[in-house]
Image (cartoon, rainbow, N blue to C red; front, side, top):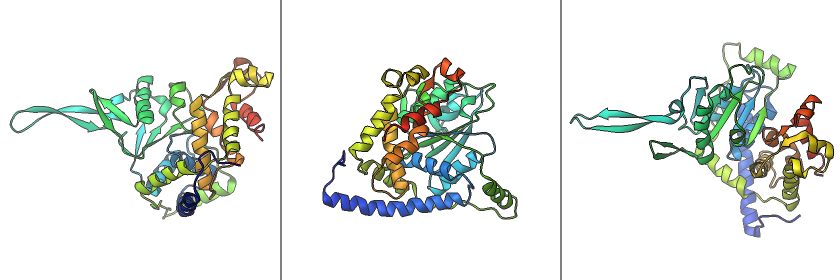
Length: 336
């Protein structure tokens, strides 16, 4: 299997040494987060994949599943200054981005000063993002994609790295504003947060109601995390994996599905950004698991988190109780 980004032997040895060091550092982060978040190993891994790949994540789950605690723990463990915004219908764009205030100096002169909003953080939690108005949601869109904001015609760059982890409650939809497709596409992964198993919930119940409670520990700095993100982009990826990513993403589009039943079921499919997201996410997952390059198993494991929020089914398919996850699973099984 030839590599798409071939390396010289010296480069391979250097990257290999960096991967070995990175694997140990990431393992420390997994262990530190696992001491605080119980029974959500898959969620923790997908959140780390999102951040290692340099992207944003959408956490979907019912209340009480430690979504907020996970983001707080990630911020401390990875050395990222984290802020939280509770999205509500009356939240304004300036409440997120910041605004200019008029100040008067001692000599009587007046000037505007920019007061940064909570978006100027390395890790931003957008809690219940679908409860904010479309105007406020769109204010976050530029920050997520362009990594800067514009206030009164002036550009202000966001800190690097910058990540948004947003949450949604899948049950209660009254008074919400569904995220537009353009903004959903900005999220690298949609991470479904499920109920913990019995043993994990028992441990959680005992350890969080005692006198002492486990606290997250910092295991790396923001600069070290940035180095890991650059390493992810340097990992070699084989032609077989690249072809599998292209095949999977393109087969999820209505005009390119070979199966007539699936072609009728898909209303619209993922765009090229999905291919980019899957490429980065598979590299990040390989690093997370201590491997030098991604495999087909990574593509299959990440197919649903990458694609489920980037496509929709037809009315007839939904009437037949077909789900997006079912379609993606069928397509992923066909890539080899």
